[in-house]
Length: 77
Image (cartoon, rainbow, N blue to C red; front, side, top):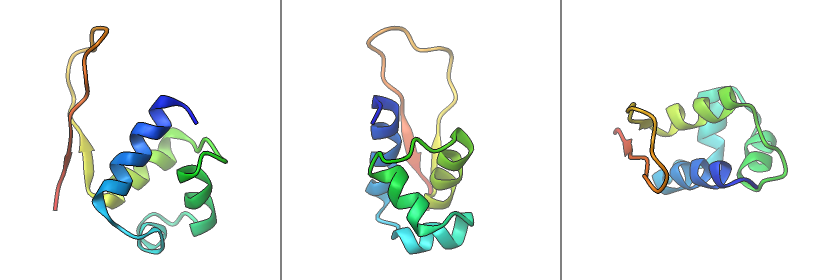
């Protein structure tokens, strides 16, 4: 699992939205979501975006990051 996948997975997990609800909201199968969340499938960027949207997480847009910078994510509920 890449650092980006771990970051995205943690954002989704932190919201507490169950995988069956994410599946309902995104149209992805629970199996595919599980595979993405466990690192067995990389998942396309569009699938990760759908999961973030379904979980109510929106990444803030900003200029390109310099080395050592961090990204802010804000759950919306």
